[in-house]
Each structure stands twice: as C-alpha cells, then as structure tokens.
Image 1: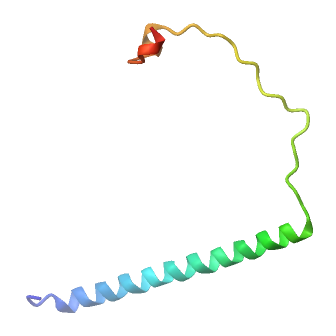
Image 2 (image 1 turned 135 degrees about the vertical axis):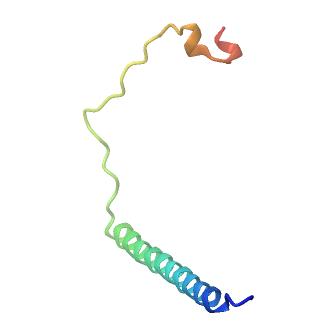
Image 3 (image 1 turned 90 degrees about the horizontal axis):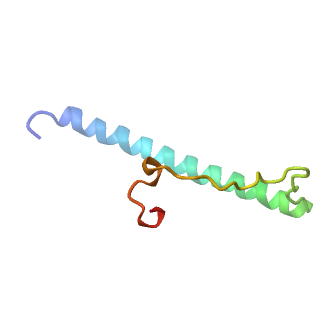
Length: 75
C-alpha cells in the first residue's frame, strides 16, 4: 500500500464499525416500531377523522403566459 497501510486499514475498520452500528440501529428501531404498531392494533385504536375541516373550494384561475411554461395543453 505504499506505506499508507497504517492509515488505510484503520479507516476501513472505522467505516466497518460505523456501518455495523447503522445496521444494528436500523434493525433495532424497526423492531421497536413493529412492537408499537402491534400494541396499537391490539388495543383497537383507529385513526380519528378530523371534524369540521372541509377542503378549500377550487377556483378557476386564469393562467398567464409565464405560468403555462411549456405545457402544450395550457395554450
């Protein structure tokens, strides 16, 4: 390695440790979330629907030439 092995191999080692740590963290977090989801599903809780909120009405807006861009259907 041209005398740089003392720097390259530790860098590979650190990178491997970081990658293994990320893998472990991902697996652990996934299992925690799966457990939480199973608990929520077992408790029978459902998503609440928002009450009193209606979508804003759609208005017809005139597009200017700048708004149309390259859209062939807009002309």
